[in-house]
Structure formats: structure tokens, C-alpha cells
Amino acid sequence: MKPALWSRLDMIARCITPFGLTVLLVLINVLPLQVPGLSRIMPLFPLMSIYLWAVHHPNLMPTYAVFFIGFLQDTLIGTPIGVHIITYLMVYGTVVWQRRFLVGKPFAVIWVGFSLVAAGATIANWLLVSLYYLILIKPEALVFQYLLSLGAFPLLSWLFMRWQLAFLSELGH
Image (cartoon, rainbow, N blue to C red; front, side, top):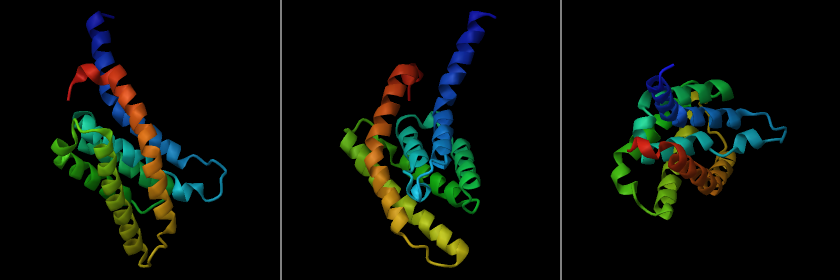
């Protein structure tokens, strides 16, 4: 093979890693970890990933990828199809729309932005599922999931920033 082909394959691999990492986080979210009730309060890892990529590299996480991730999440965890699709697309659209206020800001601003977006996504999920089943779902598990997500966000953010520096810095914004 020619070096140009290897170079193109390398570039393609780098460009699809945000999507691949987010799919991996969806799969981690649905792993049966044998801890009673953990699946109901598992941190919102895919949401964190979509948020971070929308802030730092929206060109590498296109809308159709976000749609597919939401579809995959709905399919694997058994929520009504469309709940995570709608939520993730709303988050992605909001973050891309407000991206100019987030890019280049200190981590605390990024974290506060995530806390607001995750709160909106959690409420949207709760409303969509409650509307689908025509009953009010008890929000306690969602509150714990939200709080665990806020606590896990700095670690995932740090890992993704390291990933960007190591593999995506030459791709630009």
C-alpha cells in the first residue's frame, strides 16, 4: 500500500474516534455489572461525550452520528425509541448553538454548562418517558443519575482532553 493510503486511513480513524468512543460509552452504560439498581442511576456517559465533542469538535460528531447514538441507547436499554434520540439531538443543537460562549473557557465554565444541559436532558427524558407511559415516573433515580453524572464529568472530560491532544490536535476545529 502507498503511504498516501495509510495517511488517509489514519485520518479517517482519527475522525471517527469521537463517534466510536461515544458508542463505547453507550455499551458501558448497558453492561450488566451485577449491582442491583445501578443501571437506573448509571452516569450519563454518552451525554457527556456528546456535550464535550459538540463543544470541542462538532465537526467530528455530526448530527446523524448523534441520532444513531440516541437510537442505539434507546434500543439497548429498552426505552421507547426516540427518547434518547430527541434528548441527545436537543443537547447537541443547544451546545453547538452556544458553542461560542464555551470554547476557550476555563473548565469550571464547561462544567457549569454541562450541569445545565444535563439537567435539561434529565428533565426531558423524564417528561418523554412519563408521557409515553401516561404516568409520572418517580424522579429519584434520575436525580441520583444526574448527580453521579456531575461527579463523573471531570474525569471523562480530562480523559477526552488527553485524547484530543494526543490524536486530534492536527485536525483543527
